[in-house]
Length: 435
Image (cartoon, rainbow, N blue to C red; front, top):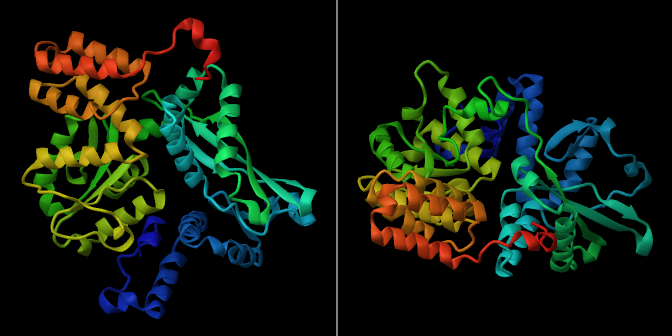
């Protein structure tokens, strides 16, 4: 149910209760709903469903390949495309029978943890802002046939423009990846041989500046903040609104559907825009949460996108696709404490840690009270790997925000945080450092 909901298929007419557990009852209804989609949406929906099913069952690639081939299609990089686009190497029998044993996201996360342990903060930041994919393998007939994969990293164009020596950085990451994963593909002669970095292609400028995609969601999120979608029932909109305000102090832009959507805009379209552009998802599991037709689809969307999910137990345990999540316990009547716990979870998660660090640095500069500055500073104390730009802005907060500068304890704490970080390299050392 959650997978097909994330694919845009209407699940509101599907059976509930005991009938929902019977495949023979549910699948025909899903087929009917799928049949009502227009052709272009059918292919998009199939791509999303396929990606989720393969993530759960890696051995299904060969079966899927054979099944789609009968109908003139193939599955490539998250999309279902006509078989005419197949690489000519397939006709020569040079496409591996099995996929690389690790997904691109697993390779990326593991490599980031290894480099973090080695103190390479700049490399870790690059990896944590990258979209990763494993390119089609190159084939060599040596030793019965060997396949060499390239890990392609797409990073924000602004980050790419700041790199000093890209080729040297690529070689450094390549050597680290080869050392870390040299034995993973041994049984099938598949090896990770190269890391390539490229800028993420931006869309054309929108009418209000920035990319078209960013312009479309600018009214939903505060700029430069971590984007957190709060999944909730309408009856709790007042309490969730208070939680949203408490999160703002920490640089988190939280989306609350019943507060943030303008009355003149299409409700469902705006929710979908927020789901597509969020950095993380926090389902607020209050009583009867699972009975809503909207919250189930929101969970499915988050699972399908693979964003971090911070489940908050407020009377209901995580269920379905998020049942394995270790939930954060809290109380909606105490929004400040709950907001602090959510931020801690975002700091702890490897996929939101970098964005949360940036959000906190930005939040300190505009902290509206000494109490807010103190709360933000306490969270900043958990980091030791600030960039040189962030260190400069922390110093600016000490100089420019009176709630920091005029409270000696807060000012001294920020200065201690900055001193813990190794100073940036001098200009004379730039040629020896790939970042």
